[in-house]
Length: 428
Image (cartoon, rainbow, N blue to C red):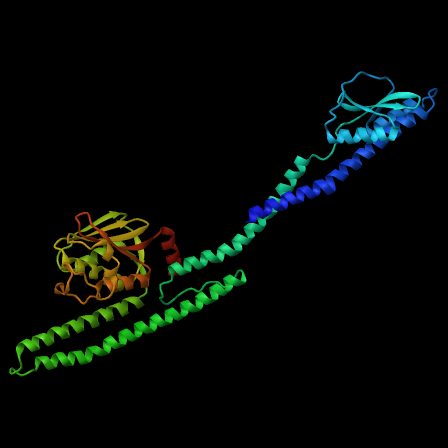
């Protein structure tokens, strides 16, 4: 729209300048030139021919006005009568003399063949005194207009796009965690209102999530005491109580304890602050904590570093390993280290249908096949993985492994050397 408007404005300006400036200027210039030529010829005729007045006058006109007055007529080719300026000039000279006039070209000059009273003269003058060329006027107006439009557009786009880019980046990076950096409230009025409302919404969401996590941690912690009393009471039941009933109660209490433990681990992980770690030994130490030997294949730089909340990442990776071992015999960890550190937990199990790969991150969601309640677990493992990844800005996704099983990938942005140097300068 700006470009189209600029074209219309430039075209209108060009037509206006051509009609109101160039055309009147060209006409006036032709009249002035014609008046000078005719007046010079008439003055030359009126001067006495028996003195040096005429040669002196010819010299003065050549020196002051670049006019060549010649009584010696030469046979010269006619000038281009299609030129608008030449046509105006010939018409104006003819009107002043009351007789038709021819315009000739020769020796790099434009010659007017003038029938003046008592003589016939040829007056030559420089043809550079022509009308302003419309094409140059159009190019000048177009260039100036394009420059003005480009400058105004650049200013408008920078003024609008800058805050929009910052808003988009903040929205993408916002995970509801504490320590949110508010958007600068600057720019046009609408963007200021957008930044203000977004900052208010982000603060409210952060407070809501913080309160939720605090409440969850408090409830889970407080439930541990009555749960321990209930387990003690079950242990102290007399022998007359049905042992099947007692074992069933014990299993229910164990399931409750597992749920409470998951809630507490999530609450602690969501609040944890990240720190710079060397990725390879850290990940290998987590895998070594898992039950059973799990091979680790490392691809890429072995000295990669990342900002990681260690407890939260440990919980994520252990949950994925536990989940893989429950549903497959073969489990491996493959790490691709580059701009991101992508940790793949790969198993050789029956796999997860593509339609269910997002739903398995929902709390208590179980697949009908191979992932039923008989497999054990609280049903919160992958949900906790997703929540912790969202809280710390990590990416998690499920794909298919080469052997037909599941490939769960957790990606963390790696630190560059400049990032490490900046962190070192802030924390000497």
